[in-house]
Length: 464
Image (cartoon, rainbow, N blue to C red; front, top):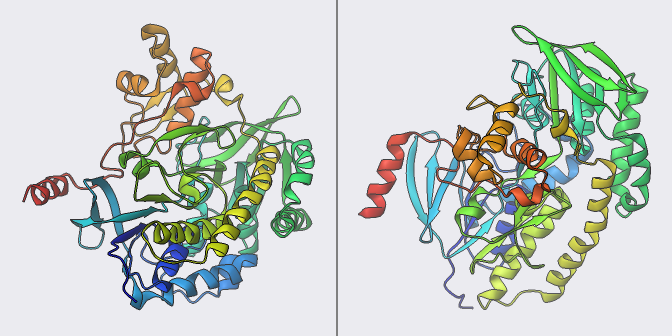
C-alpha cells in the first residue's frame, strides 16, 4: 500500500509523544522523535540510567504498570522511528527545527512536514522569601532527584504548596525512607471535600490520591491545610520553614524544602510556531488553541499532552494517539475513526474531573497581595516584587512585555519559565486588572540557554 509523503517530527518523548510515535509507526510512517532526556518516558515516567538496578515498583509505586507499558511502547518501535535523545529544540522557522545535541554540543537543523508538539509541563512557582536558599527545590526537581539520580534532596524534608503532585512527591519520599517533616497545603480541607463529587468521575485516580494522603497520615507525617507560606529561613542553606495557619505563625526545622503550585504548560515552542493563544481560566494561563482532535491554529502543527493544558498522564497518552491519528487522516491515511472518536470522548469526559482538581487545589490568588516588596521574583535578574510595582507606578506599565522591557524580569536563563506566573500575578495586582488582561511573555529563541557560538553556526547553516 502506497503511503502519502509524510515527514512527521514529534517533539517530546513523554506519554503523549510516545503514543504518537507508536501510532504513526503502526500505520507505516517513520517519525523523528526529538527529546531532551537521555531515555524516553517524560517527567512522570522518567527512566533512570540503565545501570541503576531499581525495580519499576520502587521507582513508580502504584504507577509501575502504566510506566512499564509506556516504556515498552517506545522500546517496541525503536526500529521504526528515528529517536533522537539528549536533543533540545531551541528554535523553529520555515519548517525547520534548530536542535542542540547535548553530548556533542552541536546544533543542526531538522526539517519537518508535520509537527506534533508534546513538550509537557514544568513546575508552577510562586516565590516566598528565602526560596533562593540552597536546599529549596521545586516539587518536580525533588522528584527528578529521587527517580533519576537515586537520591533525596535532604534528610528531613518539608513539602509545601498545593496540587496532586504535592502529595505524590511526599509519598514517594516517605516510601523511600526519607523523613518527611510535614506537608503544608495552601488549599483548605473544605475545598477538597467540595471537589469530591467531580473527582469521583475518575474513581481510580481519586482513590490513588486518597491512598497517598491516608498512607502519609498513617505513617505519622504532619499534614496542614489552609496554610500560607511566610518564609524559608537559613544562612548557608534552608534550616526551617515558617507558615501562617489559623491566624498564627508556626515554624518547623528542616534541611530541604520541595514546593510548587501544581504545573504549568511548556508553550514556548508553540509560540515560536505562531500558534494562536487564548486564556484558559481553568488553567489560569494563556495556552495555544487546539481543536478536539489536536489541531493547532497552524496547518500541519498538532498539540498533545500537558504542553497544551495540564490534564495528566492518562490524558496525555490519549491526546498523543489522537493527534497522530488526526495527522494521518488529514494527509489521506485511513485510520480507525471509531477509535479517534472514542479518544475524543475520553478526553472530554476528563474535563469534569480536571475542574474538580482545580476546586480541590485552588490557585492562591491572594499570593500577590501578600508578597513583600523585597521578595525576589526573578532570581536570574534579581528583580523584586517592589521593582515590578514601582515600574507600574512610574511608567504605567500594564502588560507583561512592557514590564519585561522596563525591569528585565524574565530576561535571564529561565526566560520566564520560573518567574512568569509570579510576575503576571504581581502586575495584575498592581494594576487592578484580572490576570488574563496583563498578557504573557512572548516566546523567543533560544527557548533554553545554548552556547552562543552555536547560534552563529546555525545561522551559517541556514544561510548555506
